[in-house]
Image (cartoon, rainbow, N blue to C red; front, side):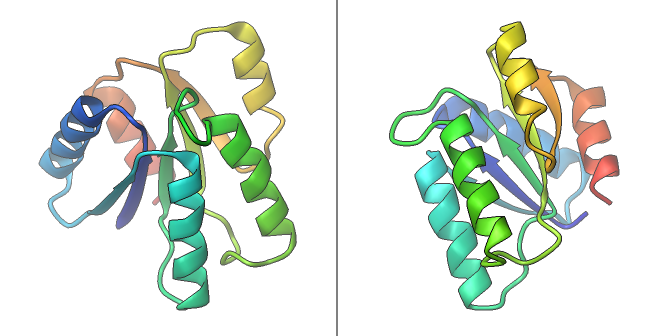
Length: 133
């Protein structure tokens, strides 16, 4: 795994997770986006420029502008049109929501590999980095 995209509007969380990621693998390229809309625009720009897309996306559900589920729905449509490189990145929901309905809904998206409730620890991050390798 070389490229990680963190999609979360909580700047403190983004800072902390980037620090943890870098402490585990100094060769990672990490990009962060503060909303699902910003992340979609970033992924589409990478695709148009034929640049490498992330191997892993860590996606929060509760964000302004475009939340995680809206992102997943839009991403699904884009993938079906082949606008973003295939195969799509592994997307892991990393959110504060422990609502069972959210977990079930996340399972409706085939590219959403899993669901973790914040705060996540070192073992969770290691797992994320290993599954996307």
